[in-house]
Amino acid sequence: MKVSVFITTYNQEKYIAEAIESVLAQRCHFDFEIIIGEDCSQDKTPAICQKYAEEYPDKIRLFCHPVNLGLVENYHFCLSACRGEYIAYLGGDDFWIDRFKLQKQAHFFDANSDYGLLHTGYGELTNETGRVRFRKRKAVSGWLYDRLMRRGNFVAASSVFIRADFLKQVNVPEILGRGFLVEDYPLWLALSRVCKIGVLLDTTTMYRLHGKNVSRGSLKKRLDMVKTMFDILQFYYDRYGASCGYDRLKYRKNLDYMTAFVEYKDYEKARQYFSQLSFSEKMRHRIITLFLKARFGI
Image (cartoon, rainbow, N blue to C red; front, side):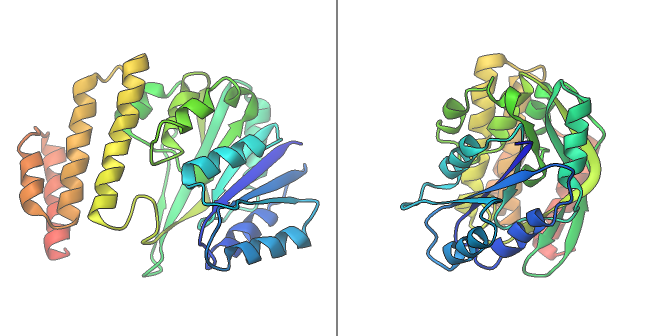
């Protein structure tokens, strides 16, 4: 099997059909399988997935979990079920907008055997307003562990392509079993230790923003996400270090906390974190802009 595509889904009856259809629409010179991890949804998601599995029995392998595993464990389960030489992921509420995504990424891997992770440009669709914002990627490739530590997660999960041989060199159960709230960033960091990371500048993926996203919703949810991202950085820094130094990681944590409090209009808490930080003029301008947008909508 050349390529495995896996989709994780939970309570996504409004979106899952579009996600599956966008994979079925791929135009490739090779065969691929689709693995769906249906995580004991309470809506019509299981029925929709079952319909597609029955319609495409030679293409789709559907796993309906009898109990809810949670995002990270479901992700790991589906990843382990992949049989392809290359592996692609798509969130159940996202969708692909380039019919040649898999073909382009497989062609890149075929020509570059030292690359094990490949991502692309993507768009963000705000569900409530229909607004689309495109996120272009910088043409930065190679050994990117230090960049991932310094800049954070710049790899869009639903755009990725992974070489299975490099994945075997990573202790995936250990990484995904540490209680982190996200499944992607710790895996990218682990892969960046054993292989090069590449990027295609094409926009192939649409990421849907809505209240049920892992990183959106309540202030508590947002703060939990800031904490887990720092826990990931702490884990890798303790094991491998980072050229940016530990102070840079703490700076990012405090900046993320401050940003969260500004966006949720808790300006007193935001001021406490602001007072701990020193900024360049460029960064100070960005912070003032963020504050004005949050408080006055300008």
